[in-house]
Structure formats: structure tokens, C-alpha cells
Image (cartoon, rainbow over all chains, first blue to last red; front, side, top):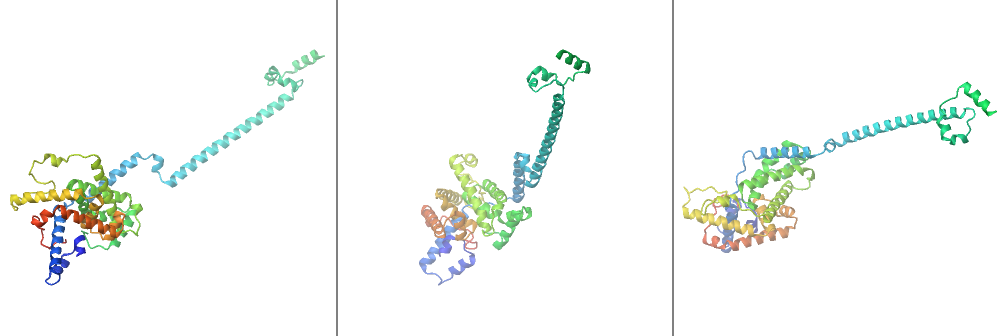
Length: 157
Length: 211
């Protein structure tokens, strides 16, 4: 009887229960009352038949929603994780190569400066103390000609 | 009302394919379950168009959350849990933002009930009006039930789930589920006693259909 009171029961079971002698009179009355109540619950508003294109509509809505989500997703999230890692690696490699090239250029420039400084230091009459003098430093690049050297020597005497 | 006597494992197997993005398996599941899901939604939100719209939403959600499906769970409990959540969201949304139904506004007193098709040629007018009144009373009585009782009753009558499965969907125990359904039925019987004793409602089918 509890099954009838809750869950749906197949017509066979109902027919079997309704057979004479199966239930006492109070039980039979309760059965009929429960069946009538089930009929009221199920039959007062029979569920509407679903439209024939129900499944197609579901698929179309999913497609529409996925397109909207795709449009809202930034490009770096749209690409898969493997391409994303590859792109980041390529970017890092490019950065590394550029940095290393820049570093080599800097080293070459420093070496050139060191050579020039060495050449300047070999200029006669140029002492370390005189490097402190801005004007002297400014003229380092200008290597005096031979006549000038003779003049300087003459003046020094 | 399960559409086909399909073993539950078959639905679970299809769902595992859906997890991998198999559209054909998804289509098969929608075809199998669209009627029970729409019926369940209609029991909680008695508007045919809206019920179908929400039922479609249930399947969309099913597609989106397929990755969370685990084989241990029976497919029907997974599906009806989604359906229950969407229906409760809609009911709560309506409670927060109550709006008059367009049908109710357009329908003059005594006209046909939304979702019902008048068949005046076969049913006498006074019987028809009595029937309409009964439908309204049952709807009101159902709407006044506590949320969990309504859902339990709908799952029991429309989803055709076992008490164990209903308990899973509701997130409660089997004894608590039985108690919810029993209490819901008792409350409804009390409110509709007048109709049940007067015999105003004659169940159609005469025991021929599953009740």
C-alpha cells in the first residue's frame, strides 16, 4: 500500500490488488483513495508534449553560447596550453638572443674604449695626474703632430 | 515516466562519451530524457513554454558540466539534480521579482486555464468550470508546499526515481525523503479534501495508466 501511496505503480499491480479477496475492505478503500489522489496529482495538469525540434534547439543554444564565450575569451586563453607554452618559449628565446647580442656589443665597445685609453696613456708628457684636468682629457684624442712635440720640448727647456 | 526501458548503465556510458565531447551521444541522451525533464519542470513551474525553456536549459547545463560526471553516479540523479537546481533558482528569482503572468492578465474571468485546451464539445460547461477550479486549487496547494516537499513529490511522480535516487538529488537520507513525500501528500489531501470526498475529480483512464 505504501508503494501505491508514493511511487507510480504499474497497472498490473493495481489489477492484482483489486482482485476480490486480496485486500480487506478498509485497505481496499485506502487503495482507491490513494489511486484517486495520484490521479489528481498526475492528471490535473498533464505535462505538455515537448516540441519536435527540442533537441535541435538545445544544440543551437549550446553553439550560440559557446560562440559568445569564445568571443569574450582573450586570445591567449583561447589557444591551447601546448601552443601557449611554445609561444612563451619562443618569446623567451628571442629575448635571450637579443640580450646576449646587446651584451656582446657592450663588451666590444668597452674593449675599444680600453684600447683608446691605452693609446692615450702612451702620449708623451701625459701624466696620470693630468688626467684629472678636464681640458687635458678632452684633448686626449688629438694626437699632437711631430712639430708640436718639438715645440713642447723646446718650451720645457 | 522513463521513455524507454533502457538499462541505467547505457545512459552512464553515453554520458562518458559526452564527457569527451561526443555530440551524437549527447543528442541521444536529450532525446531519451527530454519528456521526463520537461514534465518534472512543468510540475514545479506550470507554464508549458517556460517549462520547455528551462528543460532546454537543463540539457545545456548537462553539456557544460559533463566533465564533472562520474560513473558511480546514476545518470538520472545527475540530470535531475541539475533540473532541481534550475527550477529552484527560477522559483527563488520569481519570489524576489514577482511579476504578473501575461496569460493571467489577458485572460478574462472564466476563460481557459493557461496550458489547457478547452474541449467544450465533449465536456459540459459546468463540469468544465468545476475542473478548472480544481486545477487552480491543486496548483495553489502545490505552490504552498515547502520547497523540498514539492521537489520530492515531483521527482517521485514525474522523474520516476527510486527513494534512494530522490534522496541523492535532494541531498538527504532515504527516511527523510519518504517523510517529505508522505507529509506533502497529507498536506495536499487535507487541502483538497472537499474535492476528493465529493468526487469532483474523476481520475481518467480508470486504472489503465500507471498511477
